[in-house]
Length: 317
Image (cartoon, rainbow, N blue to C red; front, side):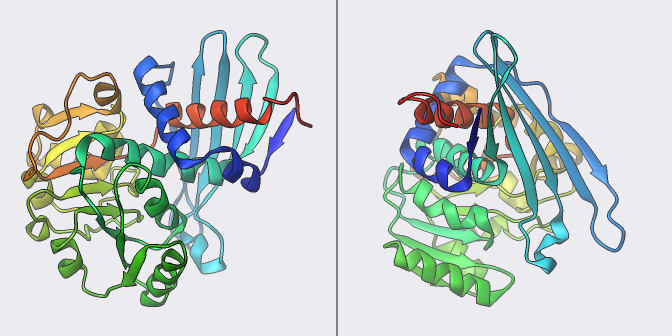
């Protein structure tokens, strides 16, 4: 049985190949039940969440991720998400590999948004605004740069010191990077706005968005979490990663409930886009909004790619 660490996954899952693997998975499909989502009370802190995310391709592979989300972990210097991925044989059920869940999740999360960029962001989009300073935000520019000519990155975070630190890290990677305290100004001059936060109060206002902007909402994964306001939804062509977003993502659930968004205005999901059932962006001035909640199909695609590459030269112990 393989045990793939964070370092292993960084080596095995390059950005372009992972984005391609996700596109292929959405094109061909797999069995992916709605994830189990359980709220757990956390004495003295915000509620935690237990997620169980299974998926399988009959006769080939079975995978499941077990993830615990503790929003208060930042106070003790730990990532909010603690997880492990288990990959099994689809023929015998035997355990083939365990994988570092945090790295697998982060890489496939940003890859899914980058896949959406292929269809929704302008081909010349080069100025990226990051809203958030966590691990997902750290990986977004490199992933998005695999599909669009990202040259400039502006970082905004509640903690300005962390935003400046992230900007320095991105500059070391070759991006023209800076931090800002003026989110409205940054969003108003962005080609792409990527938000990766756990906020329950919208941070991004629709009135700030300029024609042609792509709004990439990654962070919220429960009906109570929301990163963009009603005006952003009103002004945008709305896309989602999978059907689960209609029920789990506050940026979709809340506008649907209030009537700001109607079902027919959710134009397509990633399977539709990957299969060519919707063209994606249809004009340079269109404002597009993509809401990602994460899907077990994405985990499975990433795990299969990592396992296949790790075993190309024979089984690893």
